[in-house]
Length: 145
Image 1 (cartoon, rainbow, N blue to C red):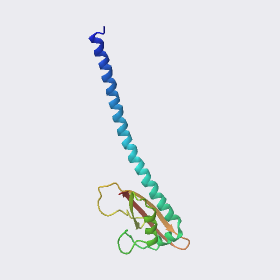
Image 2 (cartoon, rainbow, N blue to C red):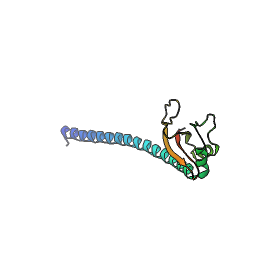
Image 3 (cartoon, one colour):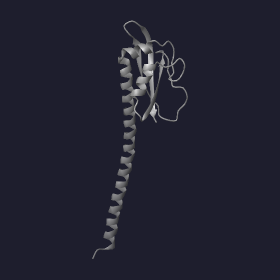
Image 4 (tube, helix red, strand yellow):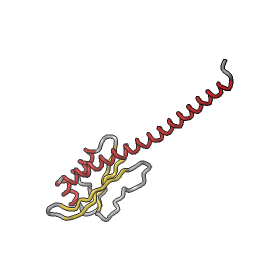
């Protein structure tokens, strides 16, 4: 015959085990959520750098950017360089939306307005071609749709 004292001991062991499982489960959920956010950051960063490097290495697109003489917004007049804009649109995945801005290198080159969403930003400096020196900063702003 098993005494009531032994039953209480087993119940306490089971309760302690359940509590440990709950704590471990909560920790996994918290850590797992952080990893997903980092994955999105890395994915957007890689996409932005891929697009910017393609533009930086393409002589036609470099010339198009170097021809600008002022800060140029994505949807303002004077129009954003057409081939560069088309390249950015073509290379942007469906999950994201991206816009760009061309500015002088010493400019902060910020995206106008405030946003409640996470905006990921990368930039490159395009300084010259073989025949022209007119440093311009190309900044790419992307966010999840």
